[in-house]
Length: 195
Image 1 (cartoon, one colour):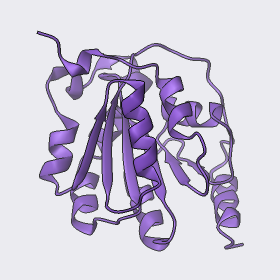
Image 2 (cartoon, rainbow, N blue to C red; image 1 turned 180 degrees about the horizontal axis):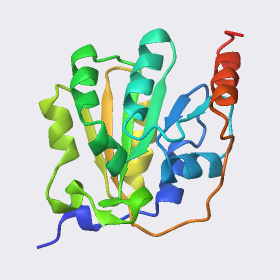
Image 3 (tube, helix red, strand yellow; image 1 turned 180 degrees about the vertical axis):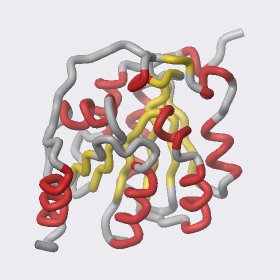
Image 4 (cartoon, rainbow, N blue to C red; image 1 turned 60 degrees about the vertical axis):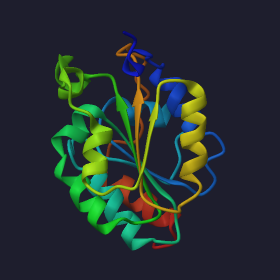
């Protein structure tokens, strides 16, 4: 029997589509592949790259969304990082910021630690977890048309959004953006008119 989880997208193409015509969107990247793909889509002062903060991207996004409720904030991270910070979904669901989207690039592996099978490849359903945590808008993508629908939803901050994007585990060239945490923070603050 075919499973929608078996239709795997090219992660780089999916991220490029998600950030096409991004407007004023603030983006918090999970470590590793998510950061490389966001940078490959076009480095931007509104990208917050969270080097070495595994499990923290969703909470950084939540903090930014609460601090700047007038701005759409999107977290782009992997399944491994989301699993490491699973409790974040409960807090996000309770706070329910209308301007926050959490997008998980799910290749069913812990890509940054050696490609071990992740829980999502062993039956954990992140969309069901998000719903159980009271996130009202939950989407899933296994085709580029689904990714385009998620991109449109990012620009309609009418409720907290969680989306799982089924991607292949294929590797891409690493596009390395700024790695200095203080510079990244200062650059994002400047883009928000705070420094």
